[in-house]
Image 1 (cartoon, rainbow, N blue to C red):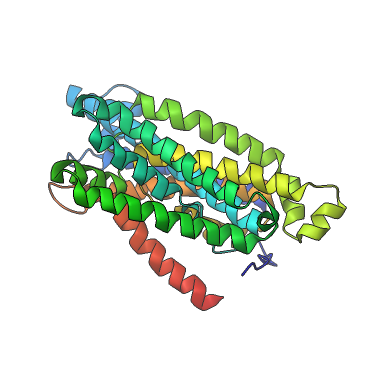
Image 2 (cartoon, rainbow, N blue to C red; image 1 turned 60 degrees about the vertical axis):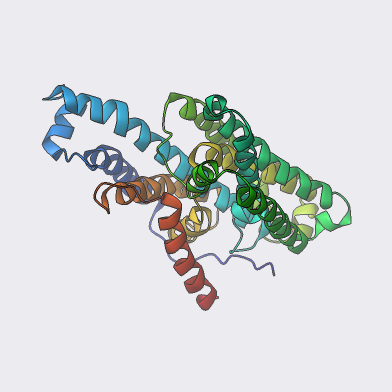
Length: 336
């Protein structure tokens, strides 16, 4: 089930590649805020960025509505893509994805349980319950694999899928027997959206992503050694089980805190590392930073499509990423 990820033979020099990616990031952050229900031209956006907005309404739309949403989308996309790259490198499985470990299913269960609480506290309790549910899924997997099974990557993936189905079935039962209005609200939340973008969401997500990225970069050399095999890594003095546990906790923390505020945004962790890897190779330090930047830009533009594709309504982001991701997944299976 595990398969070593092959290193491409020809790549663009990393310095030039980073210049291109930074240009893409700059273009994305500046231009994406001009799209929405109220169209704002590029000149007006540039004027708001460099000087002051021509109209007061532009100032409100750009800085109080779209800018926080764009920033949340970039940070969330960065985190999800980074988590996917971590999972694929630490498991040596090109199909690994943080959503396979029941994290989204656990978040859905936690969010569903908030429907029993008074509506006045659900605004604050929903992200907290979703985060706790996500961590519950990870704890269950760790407890299952705490003994000898932890040494088998295949068991790690299969346990994650089993826990995901288990928690999803409990969620479905609660939604089926619960209040229709509350159930619809949770179902829409599970589809994924950046509509909850505010300072609170950024204050929770941004530190987790920054800290996790820093730790991942520090562990880069050990993860590179792990790409060869567990035995090769052990001969270099690396504690494989401990490294794999730390990586799983990092992925869980990133995904859980993002899912808590943004809902189920799937397949980014699967797609983006595969798109980036042919250009930068499998060296962890280069892969993590480039994957995160491209993942952030990707989610920002997906959110633009979600807000502008249909007049008068917003498409859940998870619907778009799931459609793209499923096609990418099938193409990847055919290639393998």
